[in-house]
Length: 261
Image (cartoon, rainbow, N blue to C red; front, side, top):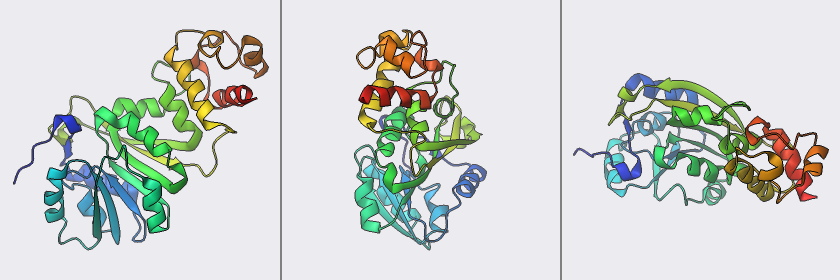
């Protein structure tokens, strides 16, 4: 039975065997690893992962593909545990508690919700060891961007606080069915045991970074004035006339510490 990709789920099914093998090698699963695949779809990566691990959990929103996924993986050596759920609402802490070990996340993230998914996963950083994702290449470029450019933004800063970002390789549209209109890329995120810089109030840090980039054309003295005045910004060793895109994640951390008092 053929399953057509659904636009509302942002589905693009990977079929290139060489790319699939390259992704699995990048994940490098050990038999006892606790892998969670996000959106396994028709099981392109699920099948080879199940040949390498004893147990694999999968979070799948499209219930119509689940019987196909179960059929395709029926003869696999590993055990597949499917969770019919929206990954944006899934409780990864509860799963980690049930398993009794940190999780390793992997998957081909839907392009239409990739950033919200990444922010959701960050909320569970304390139970996640690492993450390997296929994403729109533009998103991966933003994730790993350096200060000073147009693609450097909120996503870059928020991820930098808790993850080491490693872009791995690019995937052309022809590797998928249907082919997306853009290139994709695979990225590795290694979750830090401790944040890269002091973050006594994460919620405040998130609000400050959001405010700064929501008005990124404005200077800091204007975009984050509800948090700090010009003198307080200067006290952090940062020019109040600077714009958000010129600051490192660590500098945003210093501003958040000052704002927390």
